Length: 383
Image (tube, rainbow, N blue to C red; front, side):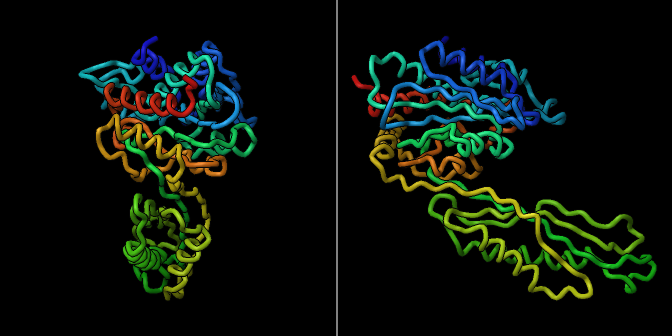
């Protein structure tokens, strides 16, 4: 099948997460890779066997290159479904773009990587090995996907890793980490006819919110060369039960984005200091429920990285970067497997992903394939 048909076939296999059933799309990738002579494995965690992954390998020895893309997509929300102008699972081509859920995130780069594997399979001999990873669970954090694969020995240490995401065919070398936390305030509830007899937990929380906003702006003094500044966002708030009662409880959930180099334990200490520095008595406050997702950073200083940059520069006829990737990715779970550099790379923009009428421009998809093929030829193809 040609490049467009391959991508259409991938888009036509729904793989929304939740629920995260990737069996059908993983099997399709496995079938295509077995047909060209790859060694194929399909591990899945016992806790969620429907989160099936496909790992296909060609060649032996070093250098070892990994091409990684995820096979799950976000689901189509009821409110989003009405906004689609095409069938989200038809893979319709219109005005030079292929439309469909997952077309840009992440099946276009997956299809490009599969075409690289097909080209590699036509070589009489490879000067090393190439591993395609079609991973489940990325859209919900990768804990039972790439992280599970890495932690359980299913993935090899590699000399160069390409993680497929939407970078406009530029080379991304870093993304931020995330630390989530919940802040709670406690007061005393009384009838609103005489609120001064009570302790208003929402008013106490308002002081914390103001302090966190000041903290957010203070973070701008820190800057990373490609991903910018760390941030602190208050995304959810809940408190009170009725307008005619003083609320005795309030809670907020916050999202603290960390730039490469920041330590989560230090950030936890900063957040605790913000909350504990305020005089809220007789209300009380606490912060907890910390959840951490690591950042990714790669120095881009190996021969493989320089070769990839040269391939991208020639095809783009422009500066390929490095750039930062603002969303997260599975690269954070692969850092311990990167003996050399790791990059994030692929067609289009993340701003098109997760939205109605998601699409990939076919010329961008072709350019991704060409850059990956050029790199494979110069790195692994014996002839």
